[in-house]
Structures are given as C-alpha cells and as structure tokens.
Image (tube, rainbow, N blue to C red; front, side):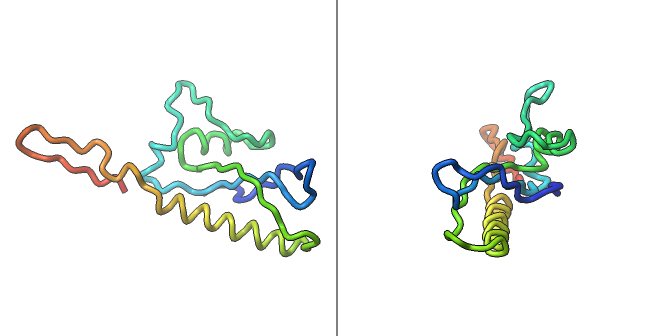
Length: 121
C-alpha cells in the first residue's frame, strides 16, 4: 500500500484553479512484475522530490504505481471541495490499476501439441 495517495505538486502559473497532482496506487501482487523497473540497479523513482527512499523503492519494485496529471477545481471552491474531488480522482485511478490487466495471458505458449495457458492475475 502506498504511504500516500494524493500529492499536490504545484498550481499552474496560468490558472490558479489548476494543480499538478500525483496519484499513488497499490498494484495487485500478480502484476507488480510488469510495473517494476527492470534496470539493475533500479532507476525508476517518483517525480516528487520529497518521496522517501521507501516510496521510491515501492515504485521501483512495482508495488506502487504513480500517475502525474492535472486537476482543475471549480473556481472559488473551498479546500473541502478540492479534497473530495481529489479523493474521487484517486479512487478512479486505484480502480483502473485494479482492473487493467493486459498481461492476463502473457507467457502462454504452444509447443505444437499442447497449450500452456497462463492466468497472470
């Protein structure tokens, strides 16, 4: 599980109601290998400069997925409205990570006689 779920990076210079946001989501165990950094040593890390060594290790080993995006809140909306909006956006990202699995049949093989069909979580 990620240490944090939503990180507000900065306000955009041209629109005071738009923010650059990072979302961190928990990756299902069976798919972590596909999110992991294959470099040795791993070079994948958060774009957030205040990420801890543990945060970066989780991103590098594939147990946490990071998505950077922009979020525009309703002009004049209070902090509570912004927080609720970002929590909803995070939940949408977590749901996507849970459901997205293009690797379901990765490494399935056929030897000319028999199929070895994989079910990669």
